[in-house]
Amino acid sequence: AAAGDECAVVVTTQQWQEAGPAGGVARRWDMRIKVRPWTVFAKVHVGLVGNDIATDAVYGGSAELGAAGALVTLSPTPVGGDDQFELSGTGALTGPPSLTCSGLQSDEELARGQCELGARTVIKGFQPPDGAGAVGMYSFLIHLAVWM
Image (cartoon, rainbow, N blue to C red; front, side):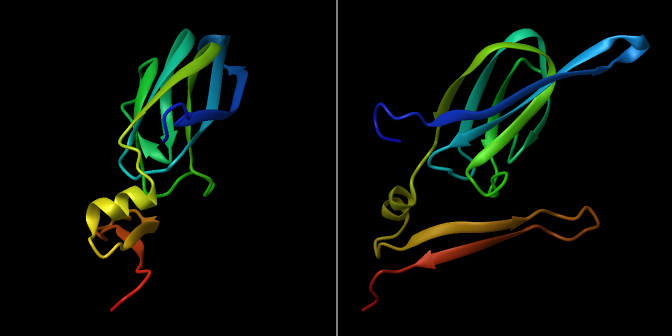
């Protein structure tokens, strides 16, 4: 992203309570974070602010779970097709998270760095392994402006 631009922004945050163990109340939360430009395998650090915060799920990326913050590695397929990932967990959020990014590159930056012909490569989809022995697949789109 250009200097001064935000690399990631919280789109939605939800908090609720549900029945917890031994008749108590468990506090839960989730949030969607939009990343620009979405770059497969780039990293977004989410520093969560609150009481008894722990992450227990991430969608649209991968992260070590359980901590009050998360270093999310972006997957090839964002949540909802809108350059977003989702985190959820337990505890009470008391403020907005801190968001920092590394490894983000636009399609144009990737093309300049990878191919002297100016080819632009975009990952269009990802099918994860099915757990029964089938391997995962990536689907790519490669665009050449002029071919001589």
